[in-house]
Image 1 (cartoon, helix red, strand yellow):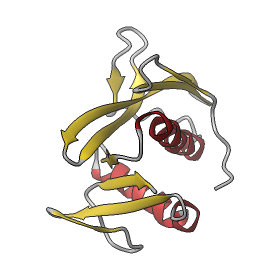
Image 2 (image 1 turned 180 degrees about the vertical axis):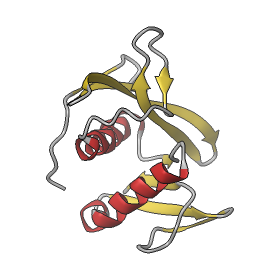
Image 3 (image 1 turned 90 degrees about the vertical axis):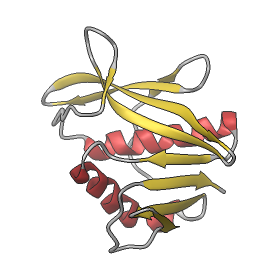
Image 4 (image 1 turned 30 degrees about the horizontal axis):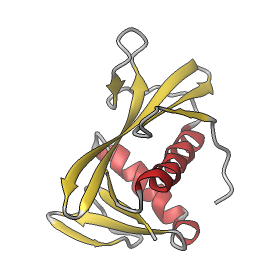
Length: 147
């Protein structure tokens, strides 16, 4: 996958990543947080969104419309690699804050699946079932694990 990325900054504990989106809406700080949600098997939740400029809190509901969504998504995916380098190849849960965001993730996983597959296992949620990711199936969320 040879996509443009934004440079990002990493917190001391390697669980929080910051970068800036650039586009017609200006310079917008983005944040990716990893939170452990399960011990056996070890699983982390990936939370992603805009940083509130006043509070610094992460908001995954904001739609910034900065016309750089592919660069933003590629940068978020790149944080997974660095996170796994530090913590190991654990399961990472990714769910959009809305059905349309899940659909955006699904479309791009499908589009780049050949590039992703050599390094990552990708699963989707269909109802309460976890199944290997396949194109043209609607998923409620995703699990990713580096090989």
